[in-house]
Image 1 (cartoon, one colour):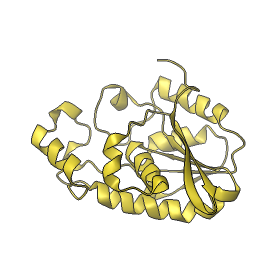
Image 2 (cartoon, helix red, strand yellow):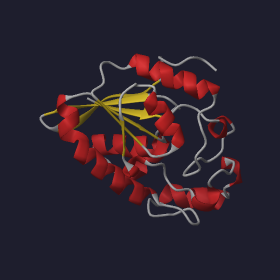
Image 3 (cartoon, one colour):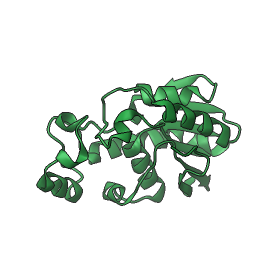
Image 4 (spheres, helix red, strand yellow):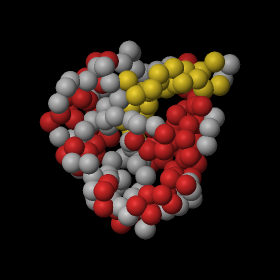
Length: 191
């Protein structure tokens, strides 16, 4: 089973800021969420994480060696990183949602993120079909991995919501990914 886990909450998440490559730590709730994640999942064989601190801190809660894979890093929001979502011009949001090749100024497009995450998923498929693999990552890579599992385009990511410290599960049937659950949050402490 492939467990796609979004990292626990940070102060920037709580404030509604775009959080791409900025590297804050988890806040107190985020640390509690990481502990709850580790308790919620069955026996884990392997833990992989984005190199960013919030993902690494969440992954550490599983008590296993953490493999770092840069392909699971969050979307690069470029000049918009750390900005309130409401500060992005409406016309830019419209263009971004209409075109997966649109890049925020100085940032990365969803199409590029989708390609790197799909490659990471392909590389994990065999291992995750015979063992429990946890990937601790960010909102955009979780969405891209779900799109991979469903065999849909990256434009589908705009129609998904992924909560902090949520779990999405991908199983494998006849070597094909099957989305078993999405955005599970029942294991989390309430803020």
